[in-house]
Image (cartoon, rainbow, N blue to C red; front, side, top):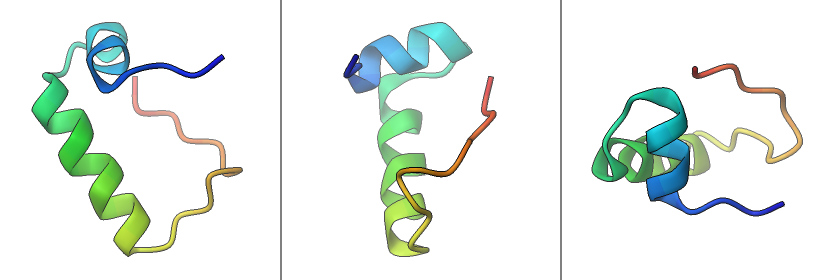
Length: 40
């Protein structure tokens, strides 16, 4: 189920802006969308 940046942030105790910044960074570093990420 797709989640918005705001929903992800709420689940992890992060702001929407921080989630957006992290996801952008992951994309630039070519982190696979199939990788298991444990941010929370």
